[in-house]
Length: 389
Image 1: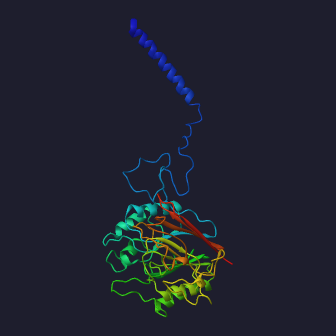
Image 2: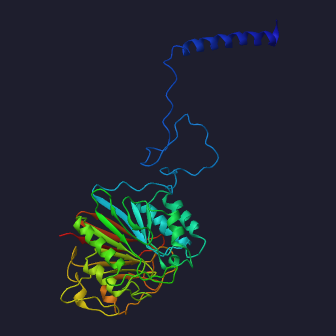
């Protein structure tokens, strides 16, 4: 063989010898190298990564609760682990299906509470209750305790039905007593509770056209009184009452919850009463009964009913009323000259410091701390605290 063919033959023999030597040397190595560590840094609590040998993923399937994407928290991200000896919850009402409602849900998701109290008025449209539930679970996760009480827009069925809301956003709290969605209470956590949540429905009509009876001495009046007394007999540090309709307001509505029922909450020293219905935020001073205030009278002001005018709020002195009708729908105006205005420490509405958002509350054995957290694009805030003696 001469010329180029011969050169190619010698080259082939040389390559074969080199390859054989390489294979011999490889056999002396201590096995294959370990796979490189996966990129992205440490895994955050509540997230997961597939193993290095995982099969290619199937066509798009929603991520299960507890996972998250690298760029944005998953809607199903679990609540943050609470600090030992604390309860963290949010509350708001008057929500709807608009962009504003989604922004408020994003705010709640960012706060990562253990549960949320939804204070009524949900889809605002009959037949769209499932759309509302899908919006909530898509943002907060299917197993998140989004605890509801009815508002007037779903109590009688004309803009939805509370039965449908309860079906797609069921109770997630253990030990609940009463009729979920209408009138119920639950101690949280179930073991060594720090808060009793009491949710009631005064002042709104139901399917039969009747308003539930919360008048003095009625069965529902007595149920509420017993729920408040029961929390104290069990030495539960805090009582939080939630309902749709307020009594006092610098907004649009009068005392739909009822004067006597409102005075019951004050007489029983409920620590915090949360309402919606008025599409505003307002938070009262502590209001208490006593020699200077035998009873609170709507549409008037009595300085004797102010329990905390000259100092910090202390449990037992009075009740704080907060309306958080800022869950997503259009806001109402507030009225600085309303005769009830001196009862309030602050307020926000369409014509003053407008803000959608949520109340964010943390309770410990010693204090209840709350703040209004605005949704993206708003700046109004409020903070308050009640200490135990």
